[in-house]
Length: 504
Image (tube, rainbow, N blue to C red):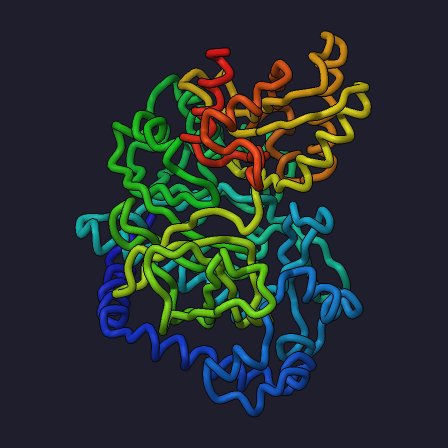
């Protein structure tokens, strides 16, 4: 096929010069004021006096911070799926479906043509960084493999669709993008993950794959299966670029480096959310992700320790600081206004603005892309204990990452202390119920547990009475306001708990 890399390299050089001249503060202020002008006649704009807002400070005084549940209850639920001129001009044509919120299984995030254009611009920036770092690249001499969700969309009403954000993006891809895209439409539509992984892995062996994008846990399974189907040989010898995001890459890095050691592949992290494509790596893996400043999205940053206050401090790129853990809020061309997306970030630098994604505003586990939140685990543990006739004292859950052997899947390990040690039947019943309840409650967890393709069953280890108290004492955290951490995403802390339990 034609190598389009020289054309993209010309764009990358132009784009790099433009970004080098960009004033972050001026750019972000201009974007906010433009969004306000465009939406001033919407219901939301009239409610908040957009026509009279002339500065960032005035916006922050007039528009409070809100979460998804606030927008859903106040603005979206009553008219869904026909959102006409409510928080954004015109009708919202797409909704990105996500799961795992504290108030239910499903969220419907508005997506507009402008937001899709913003996402495409962000994708081109990723290409820009790669081409600038690799002058001899031939990235577009072959195919770009996106391992995403099903592209099948649900037509909620005529002209309004909902589905996976990757499906929405793929469906709206320009004609020239489809030339370089893999998989084809039939494979992309598949919703059964096991079938999709198997069939795409097999079909990809006949393609010249130059880039590969997706969630690390799924990409590992794909690469290992493709290698098996290819007789143990590298399936994509010309692979140049692996784009990853959604979960912490570090636990996976060594395995990817081994799997791709005989390819020229480099790794590049991205920070896409259903609400916006927020940042991407433009430098080294430990330098942070460069904030997408001129993409029709305005960002605010709230110190995490102030988030529960009635009037927390709201920073923006004009006064943000490095080293502070912030909750991030977005105002976008899809009708989100001072919208807390639930992620926390910390800035590594300000010129240009680069950040690290540090976690969620609530306890969560997403080692494999399962996006478990504390409430879901708490409910599952409580109901499973009741079903097994047990009473819970304390527990902690963390992720156990697989070794090289594909027969061992990553999974969760739940250390739990009951009022008494369970018998074998109780232990098995409890473990099975936790898995079943989490599968019912969380769509992402269910997808990763489906036929154990992406994640094994949770492993339950019942501890003798007093174990958690002894561990907290050892850490100097016994009594007072100290609590046993329920979900542990910190690898060092979870390793400390595991070592302590082994030693007892």
